[in-house]
Image (cartoon, rainbow, N blue to C red; front, side, top):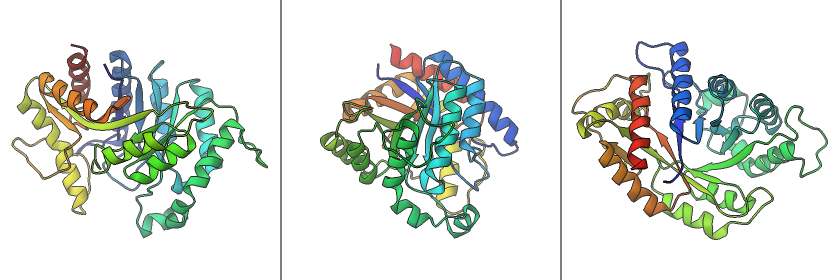
Length: 317
């Protein structure tokens, strides 16, 4: 069975609070650990009422205290929003708190309009152009493989596993050139998945940290006892995504029976355990991914845990 991991956006429900969202995230992480999932990642988003992961390293620390063995980390940190030195300090701290468990996925897309750029005090278009250099500098701050005029403390010597994230060919090329593991965001941007994975594998150059290509692909997965039950669970996230695309983002809405929307669902598995097993099997055969990371927010946190349970059981058959 291909290794499975969990991506959580720390959703805030309609009628819910931030505290409840963080409690749900830590509960989900503990369940994922118990069920045998390999990693639990949260993602950086800003100025969105329905997503509570903006202070990503703080949320990871919260999750770390609720777990003991599962790898935890960012999927990812949008590096143009920050400077490498501060991220090295943050993730060096996390590594000291949770040794040998920290992942750092790095993304180039800041996803920020002019107002957020002003709030962050960043020229994000310029910062995105500097992204490759910033990745190299960040890795050097953690590993010491380049002599820098200042050391990150904490940071230097931390055993943080760095990943390159992407939804286009750019990240695939950079991951290959730097000899990094690569995770593709096919759960929301599937169009370039096959081309990106092919390019990454063809151009991969071994590094001191990775001797062969290692690719993870993301899927949207909702598993329930029946196909119709799973489709109902999925409707909350589908509504949320449609609202985001139409310029009306908000908190995660309750499910709606019979809801349908035109969405990029090439990398999804929604249904009963048998349906999900078949869909994930086809996806793994197509991509030859070394790992699969599962996304899928549910209005009821218990339903997400149950979905993870049924998914793991289905693939273990």
